Every structure is written in structure tokens, then in C-alpha cells.
Picture 1 (cartoon, rainbow, N blue to C red):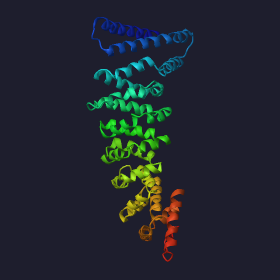
Picture 2 (cartoon, one colour):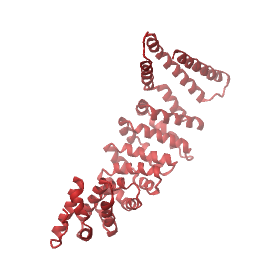
Picture 3 (cartoon, helix red, strand yellow):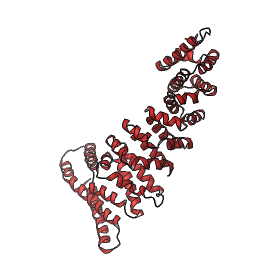
Picture 4 (cartoon, helix red, strand yellow):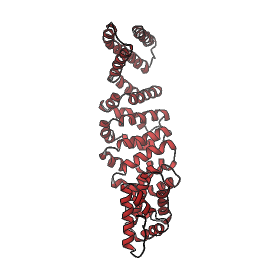
Length: 379
């Protein structure tokens, strides 16, 4: 172990000599070379801080190999959580430098915020860091480099996973607009990570209103419509979180969410997840009007009969309950289907507690509206 540590220190010194020589001899050495020197010096400083601890461990006469390994790992893990603010600042500075420097800095920031919780937090704690991070995407002269855009948006996503960052990120005036823009333009990885970031930020209730009022509804639905497998899940999660606010439900209905979601369900795409959203939308009067056709009602009843998912059955019967509570004509359609198949009666007998309650509620309405018709013998 001592030899390994010694060789690491030797290699770091050699790297530093090479970089310093370039700085001294090459007038056009570039900003990145300076940053590399800072990185090596930081590594050496970190190494020196660890050395006394290593000496104590190695000085013990009897130390099990497994314990030795565990103690060294603990020391490394502790050091990895420390944020080098000088290095972080240098990376942010590089984002206003040449294109190669920008791309390298963005990739490094993406890596740091993915692997280290402390860097997630530091990115929002550091003065004006988010605006500096996204500055390359705010330039209107040319479209952003696709790889650079992907790395920067993914860095914002990584930062959004830290709970303390969600409010600050959403309230930054450049973040949500750039996320929305990135949902519409960029690599598929950029677009899905932008949607995932909106989903992450919308976990905070106050952010649901901010995002819903910012123009995110249509781009999220477009991402869902395009149907790229790796992007649908992120779009669905963001839509689900946003639909927890009634005002956002109305916005999604207005932008055509009901028809789109029904189409995806009929195609067998993310059926369980989309039925949850459709059940939320079905609390809206305009959505009920769209759901109130025979084909849709029969499709929902068919899912109840054939699906193996109790969650899907629950949401289907919840949608039917909301639909038939507003329109007697729709209740007649459900009644006719129930007389033939007794789908709801079986669900009332064998379904989950929530499903039973909704099924019984629909059957009771049918009995009250059409007392001469006998249905529901199974229950």
C-alpha cells in the first residue's frame, strides 16, 4: 500500500512538472493548462492531508487486511465529499472561454455533480453558479453545440436531485425557459434530461405552479407524442407531478392531453402510468366530455376485465365513475355494457378497496337512475 501511495505521489509530481514546463515555455498554453495545474496541485494537497492517517494505520503491528482496506476507503470517501471551490470556480470560468474549454468544463461538471452529493449542493450555493453554468446556452448568435447542451442540461438535472436546490433552481429566471427550450431542441438525451429536470423540480409544490405557468405543458406533450422510448418515461413523470395541481390539469386538457394519452394507452404504451394521469385529468369537465364516447368507455371496461394490474383497474373505474357522474347518457352506455358483461359487479366483489368503492358507486347510480333494470347479481 505504501509503495502504491508513493507511486501515486510520484506520478502526480511528474504530471505537474510537464504542465508547469508547458506554462513556462509556451506563451499560448491556454486557460485549460492552468486549470490542469490547479487540479494536480489539489490532488497533491489532498494526498498530503491523508498521509498522517495512512502512517498511523500502517504503523499498527497487527492489522487485518480487510480492516486496512475499509479504513483507507473511508478516508478516500471523506476526501471525495470535500468541494474544491477553486476548482469549481475555474470550471465555471472555462464556460466563458473557447469552445473546447467549454466542452471539457461542461463534461467535468456533469461528472462531478453526478458522482458527488456535495458538488450537487455546491453548485447552487456558489455565487451565481447556475447562471454562469447556463451562460453558453443563452447566447442567441448560433445554436448550442449538441454535446455541450447535453452536458449542461444534465448537470442541472443532477443538481436538481438535491432537495435544497429545487426552489432555487426553479426561481432562477434562466433555468425553466432553457429547460423548456431543451425539451424541444437537442439530442434525445438532452430532451429527456430536460423533462426529467422539470419532473424533479415539480416535486416541490410551489414549483408546480411556476412550471405550469411557464409554457412547459405543450413541449412535454410533444415529447410524449413523439414516443421515443427513453423519453416517454421522463415526460410522463413530469406530467404526473404537474397534474397534482388543478390549474395544470386544465392546461393539459386544453392542449390535447386526453386524446394523446388515450392513443398511447390503446397502443399499449406505459398503460399503467398513463391511466394514473388520465384519472387525474378526468376530474376536469372538459376532459369528461372527451372521455364520454362509447369506444373509450368500452376500452376502459375491457382493461378492467383483462388487465393483470390492480392499479390499472383502479384508475379505469375511477375514470368511469367521474364520467358517469356528470352525464346520464354516459351512465346508460355503462349500464348496457354492465348488463352484458357484469364487469363492474365482478370488480366490486374481487377488486381492491378503492376499486370496489368506485364500482359499487357506479352500480348504485345505475340502480337509482334505472330502478327497473336488475344488474350486479355477482355483488
